[in-house]
Image (cartoon, rainbow, N blue to C red; front, side, top):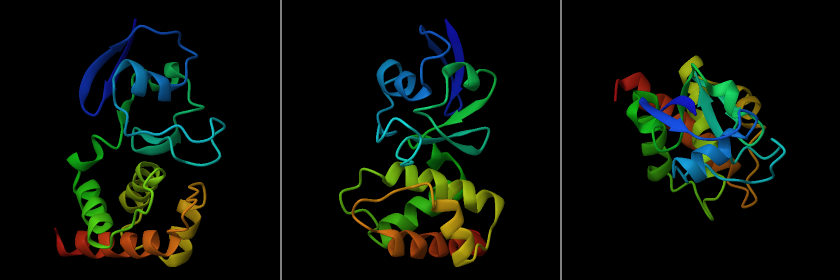
Length: 155
């Protein structure tokens, strides 16, 4: 039995330590907001946070999450940054098909947690590992700027 801290709650998973974190989240813990995209850590759809850092859960072994705080799209709204990003995503109607959006939101939250006023270049660099088949990159950038402004206002 592997013990995890997921979205601020204790969770137990009966799985092998080398099982990808993605499958434990989706199949064992029923947190299906984190998506399977490519399975090779190339698309970013499976992005979650480990101690605040964005990681690709499809290639992160379950054992790497032991003793760390795992945050998924279901839990990111518990933080001020997460709420600001989610509000900006809704306000600017960022998603089209939506499949990549949980990973996009998680990467955006990690960026804003470390850099409150990112430039376009900062955003492009931080988001470069997240692929959107619908091409919502301009909306993503605008939403990150909007979330930054919300955070500066103290919202």
